[in-house]
Amino acid sequence: MTEPVPTVSPDLPSPPWRATLALLERLPQAALSRSFGRLADLRIARPLRRIVLGSFARAMDIDVAEAERPLEDYASINEFFVRRLRPGLRAWPNDPATAASPVDGITGQHGTITGGRLIQAKGRDYPAADLLMDPGDAQRFDGGTFFTVYLSPRHYHRMHAPCGGSIPLARYVPGALLPVNAAAVVHIAGLFPRNERVICIIDGPIGRCAVVAIGAYNVGRISTTFDSAWAGHGGAVSNRRLPAETRRYDPPIPVAQGDEIMAFHLGSTIVLLFEPGLRVAGPRPGSEIRLGDIILRRA
Image (cartoon, rainbow, N blue to C red; front, side, top):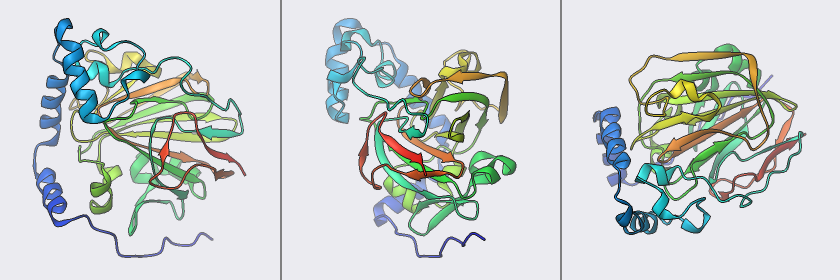
């Protein structure tokens, strides 16, 4: 029998942050995010790109030396934001008994999925069934492992397959577009299941893995490399005022560890769920993690 998650009092952010988050919950998040998106998509004249994008990179603390192309080749802030990395900058274990970080970011909560619940922050947990919008699939992960990574604006924002296998289905779940920064995570109950998200399921040598890309305030768009036709015009699945949708692939889409599968258009969070049989090998919460770093190994 699994033990219940202990009840503890949550940490709370500062009063100004609590007031800001309360205000954002009452604002039209999707409409505001689409407005930010349109601004980020504005084309920049080539002679101005180094000045504009260089200033943006300095403000966000982005390492432009890691970008695949020079600044002049990116026509907008959004295009630069979803830049690819220069080849060879990240390494993958290529070990079928491991899972690796699908992104650059900051390690969030991780641990065992107990009683069907994942930890969001101290004193706050949420049901896997609500996150996945599939109670049956959520049961498969009970007793398994979850791993959370937050992507700040300075991080590389393409997502890669943490393990090899095949994609039998993916799901879009509409929802809010609340912030997912540290203050929001400790303050807003059930934040991740409330926000809009795209879920990609991978079946492979280490069992089933759910890659949950969670949208957030400011653009909130998520594009799907594994199914480019899904995004359609505009290149993004989420924040389009569409109903929930599940796509099943027959045959499943093959994917190798490290293959690009999705991209965030501005910052957000990713939550990974794994079936039992793995142990955490990644860094502690709050630590930087890089694409390809090993986060779990077969127990």
